[in-house]
Figure (cartoon, rainbow, N blue to C red):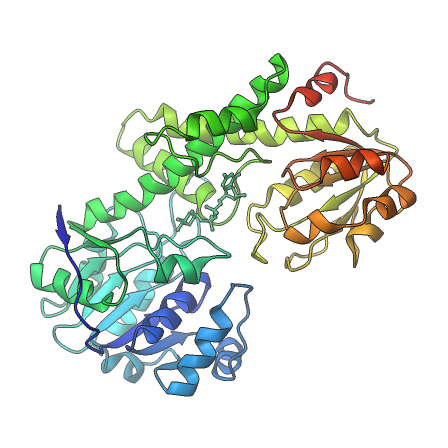
Length: 444
Ligand code: UDX
């Protein structure tokens, strides 16, 4: 593994980005912001038309500003996928969907189709780069699909958190490049000039594995603190105190030690299952990854049981939050919606509020326009997404419309003193107070 030091000034490069989803749009807009000339392509006619007008289809802090800047300066354009769009590019990033199959394997048909479609139109010496997460070994497959010795293939995995993807791109902890050719690695490193960060250069397979290992490790860290939280409830300890106490050890670090309803989103679940699948097909034992997934499922079960100790099947509950985390409209693998479905299955109506989330209607779940309105007539409130606005809700107003007085705060959002003053009983994950309910039976 090599480390490339301080990168020089930006030497503008013609960049192509195939796919304008959560990753592609952020990558394209940020590379344009760095001074490159970026062409983003997509098969979605309506999306391309909207993007050309600066209308972006996702919630991502700061992205609309960068897209507007790129359009205004002429450094960012949006095209329907066609050969000419990519023929002038020196580097082409693959930011395509890789749907996960039930067994954890990824469907690479979108990647293969895009690579085969583009192959005959790429200029010699072009670099095709896998950006969105792909299984280990994909770079070798892309090389085969390209069928061209004069076009290079490399891996440059993204480490973008939804909701702060622009910041994560422009202020990365590191840039990882997987390339077999030093000149290719140097060209890709130079593309990131202007980002004051460490550039790690390795082989493509290791770069692909770095991405999986990073996500699976972060997911495991969260599963671990949630597991400790469940234990804290049983023994009357406080998981936030424990997290602070262990996180102060630089070998552990304070990040990703916040207890919650379990990890969701389009990455941790898919990548953890993908790594477990990779181990299984290679006949390699990976009990830590598998246990992290099981433990995450247990955490949602735990939140469900905690809520069911507070409300019975004839009740209704309010749910604050549908998105898998704050800052995004994304509800993929959202613990909130998974919990809502389970409560509905137990005969409990769910009145849900979320300021930004996009999700389809679902039986027994009523979407309401405000956090207070969600609480109208309910037996209890469940906080599942840590939107900042929930910290400021008038809890006196909440209590005045609720039929019951219990709150299961899975995200540590509700202010304890204001809740007590409003006559609310707040149960938090991993706290001694939850223990009072730990022994209580599920309300039949
Ligand atoms: C993740 C990785 O962080 C990112 O580097 C990668 O490129 C994509 O996957 P993302 O899934 O967007 O990013 O969100 P992240 O902020 O990592 O949160 C993932 C899940 O863990 C969310 O459900 C979040 O609520 C949960 N989480 C996170 C916790 O429960 N506790 C924490 O302390 C942190």
